[in-house]
Image 1: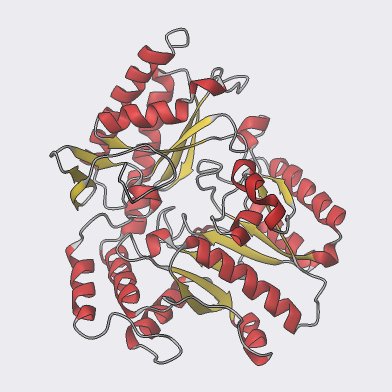
Image 2: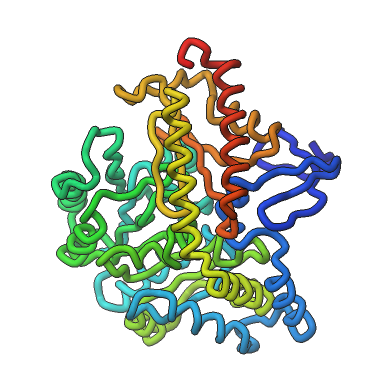
Length: 444
């Protein structure tokens, strides 16, 4: 560990030397295949020449201009393009520097909009358990991962949670309309228990991120959630920090449901790792109400930064010109099938799930009973480290409310080719075999 720099833990990693495409090299020359796009960020890969050219051109004019002093053509252009990508009616964009800031922005905008409409009693944001929505205190309050929230509980307003639709654990068929009805009934009961007039919004990932490991909602769930929000006067906010930018096969996952949200939160793949960048895309009337009643009491120094907008424009150019949404669907389908093959080879892989190139698999002691591996094994750490030693980067989390269970995100950049998919799977296969030999001989 550095004498001066610190991160979350004392674990150290090699120094980065360079990155290109889906690969990174450390200072010793070791190459790593980026099977997680960093943290599901590098959607167009590393060091893409078009993005770098866009940024270089912007650097020749202005990198920063404070939003209260100047407007910027590149920021205006990027906002217009992003609004066109969003569902109809979501035309107002507020730029920030990342996902946690974007979540804060959305919940503050929702609160100020309802104040402007004369409903001050609405202040609760309902979200799911488990879920992850960021690391600031406001975002932690709406995050349904107890280990992340408990140390800070006295410092923040607790927000209501309802169980995520973990159909694979409950033994329910995600294609059966009754499955969605089952979980929607739980949501409606939670709304009524909280007193509907106190609820401001429902915050949800349209496809699960790190907390639920690429959980795809059962058929009809998102549409039913939209109907419940309409029935009880809640805003519906999609957290697309991870799903946006083409990762699930459409630019926003919202495009895959007949359930238009009131706001979309975007980050990660929006800037592709080239600049810190996030955004909230909102219904026009919500923004108009806030601006007509004293303005938006919110902001960040680097919001609407010209250089970040140039990076975002470059990333969006690549997504469109290289048809990366279609590639995410095509290559994601191939990779999903290959992960299913690994599931057949390794009985401790209890589930494979996801959409596009947002994929995950979950380790279990028993795939039938869904029994977790022993908590003290720390499989989510051990497999990641084995894969890392083999030159493959994957991303893990604890599946069951952040306290036990082990799932692994397999989310390479959207530029990944079929041959590179073969390479990824071969490295993962090798790592799973080593993990089984070292820790799970009795299971394997």
